[in-house]
Each structure stands twice: as structure tokens, then as C-alpha cells.
Length: 142
Image (tube, rainbow, N blue to C red; front, side, top):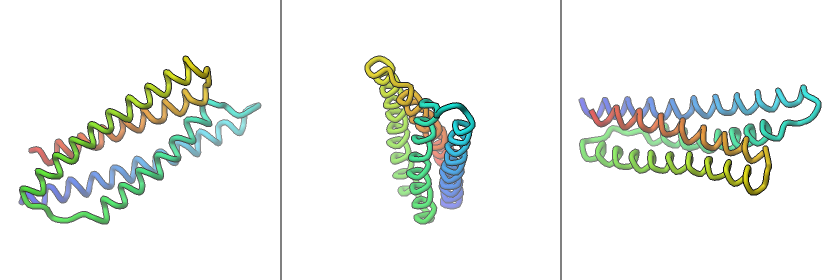
């Protein structure tokens, strides 16, 4: 019974990662299309779209790898998965912090709007990954 619940939660987690990657790629494409109709390229949207596309590839790879490695777990396997997901949640918080630092540095030091767009995309990905990972933690911690 427990192994079915953990398997279903892991399966949903992989689907969530793949869906977020697809949405990120769609948003990156839309951002680039929006900038083409204007007088000139928007540095903020270009930085945002570039980071969205790069992170989409990384997240899609992680989601596909997770999907490929789905197995039934016993109680100790579920406990290891929960610890791993807490570590990943900590990394997600670090990604959000990295986005904030990138945004602050690009604004204060370089005065570049492209860096602000990239920072917003990094922080958005960190927050999305945090929510996705916390959903898995909540599902397997019951």
C-alpha cells in the first residue's frame, strides 16, 4: 500500500517537472516572439527568455530521468526519498537566492536590464521547483 502511494507521488512529481519544463519553453518562446514585433529587442525579455529556455532543458532532463527511474519503494526507500527531496528543497531555496543576488548585482554593479530579466527567470524557476518538490514531500510524508 505504501509503495503504491510513493510510486504515484513520484510519478506525479516527474509529470509536474515535465509540465513545468514545457510551460517554461512555451513562455520563453512567447517572450522572444513579443520582442520581435517591437522597434528593437528588449534586453529584459531576452534575458528572461534565455534563462527560461536553459532551465527548461535542465528540468526536462531531470523529469525524464526521474520518469525513467521510477520504481516501487519500501519504507526505507521512501525515507531516503524524503531526505533527498528535503535536500533538493534546500537547493531550490538556494536557486531563488542566486536569482536575487544576480538581480541585485546586475542592477547595482552593471546597470544591465538583461541581467534583471535573467535573475527574474532564475528566481521563478527556483520557486516553481520548490513548490513541486514540497508537493512530493507532503505526499510521501503522510
